[in-house]
Length: 123
Image (tube, rainbow, N blue to C red; front, side, top):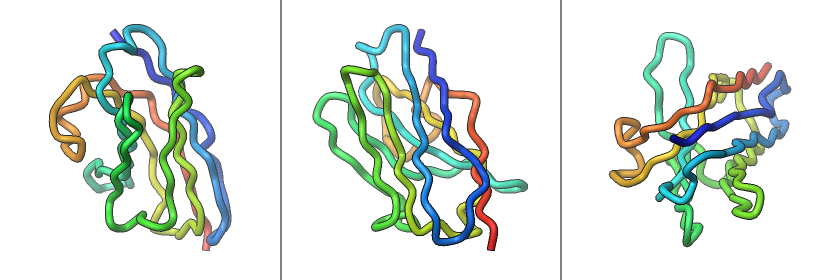
């Protein structure tokens, strides 16, 4: 089992920045990659970004490229999502998730999920 706890979500004005954190514990040696997803009211959960656990390779959804950066601190077993130039349409609950394999953009590949943290961007 892997446990995930997100933090860092809050209300911010458009153009502002936030850094989300995802602390992991448990069988972290089984993790192949860590993803960030988000879900806005009435919408499906969508892929935002991913980082591979060992090599640190990153991939992003087109709508966050150049604005969001995913990183990890293996010593702290923590993954971060730095979000800059935030827009009202970024408002959503953000989830981190851990996968032991599978396609990084497919939420069904992720076996472990955090509880989510609310990000609200005001215009």
